[in-house]
Image (cartoon, rainbow, N blue to C red; front, side, top):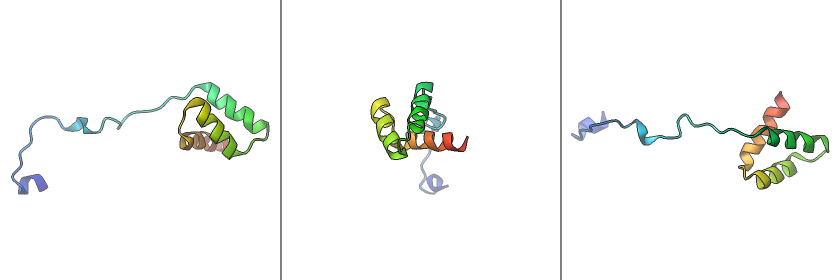
Length: 73
């Protein structure tokens, strides 16, 4: 609508501007095993998050998500 009022005409496919729409991230099972082992050892969640994110080069928020999912399962 805005483009019409500005008399702008576009041609072609514009779907490609968001390439991350359907992307996903797979995490190896060793990450889950390591977090579970650290929890059994009694490590704090913050320590687990820091160590795993550093060792596996994962975003700390991703590790926190993994830990939260493990707790809810």
